[in-house]
Image (cartoon, rainbow, N blue to C red; front, side):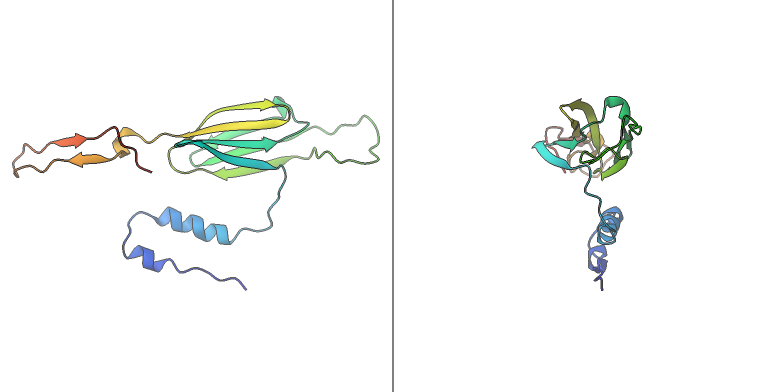
Length: 155
């Protein structure tokens, strides 16, 4: 039996959070999770993140990394090695696809592969138009001026 959370109280005092509620509902419906390949997600700074993924045996040509809006997709596929009969196969070489949902304004900076670890660096860059703005109160005439405080960041 699965308990569904009721998010309707959030709608009384919030506007535009439909995507967040959808994410929370979808996370409750996740099916069996494949834990391969293993990975870490690390916050390395205020607006910086790093995903490290163990992809032993894969070369750069075997991996494909794409970002489409709020999704980062890492795919790996390797051709079958026919150089003998395996008596034991402990190093996985099967194809995989790992999807990460990214917050708004999070972008991939770069990716590198070294010692069997794929490292993807991410950065959150909030556009100036979405940063905190201080609005001056005018006298009601057409001379109202917007003052933008560009030194402050919002999440």
